[in-house]
Amino acid sequence: MSRRLSIIASILFFSIGASEAQTPSPDGMSAARALVTTMKLSEQYKALLPAILLGLRPAVVQDRPEIERDYDAMMPMLTDAFAPYYSAMVDGIVTIYANNFTAGELREIEAFYRQPVGQKLLEKSSMVAQQSLQIGQEVGRKAADDLKGRLTEALRQKGHKL
Image (cartoon, rainbow, N blue to C red; front, side, top):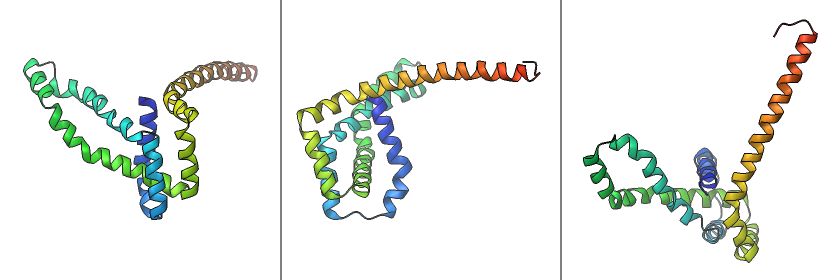
């Protein structure tokens, strides 16, 4: 799930300028918001906060128990502070969808995600993306090793000492 969220967050942050340049129709925005709700993206964005706080904890706490206790006690305040960012992410992704699909297309996509197979895709997509990344890394590593060997041999045949 975190890989998928990272991708979504990256898309949001890198395309925010482009999404502001276009003004989607109210119908498109409504259809996009319904899709985002059906895809449960808001729940996934909310799940980002614990990971963010976990990443910040060592730098802030610095292995000091007294700070650690206060840090943990501040979680509700931090959750409230995250709300504007959460809303901005949801609004941004709604705008991205509305800019890239018609209202009719968005309704068709949402209809797919409402079906059991669409819900299964949502549940499994993080795992599939993670496994796909692993395969891509393995194959890429093997290809790089093979290409390095071939290039080295070809350069040696041309008289280069490697």
